[in-house]
Length: 77
Image (cartoon, rainbow, N blue to C red; front, side, top):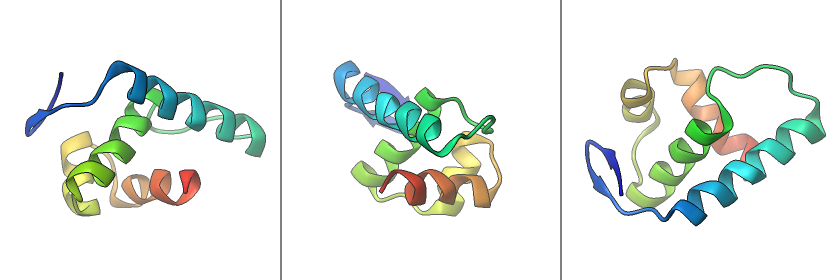
């Protein structure tokens, strides 16, 4: 179980799968550096999809800029 403001049930397999998608996408587009590692970026995306959190709330919770919180949603869709 992962904790994000409240208990959020996400399986390890789900997190690893989405993190793998993020890694492959970054490799395909030639991204060298991101603020969040693939695992945290995957968690941000999953929290957004599961709990429908707003981008400002995600940015605050993950300690990143608002633009960073919006990026993973656009690049992985």
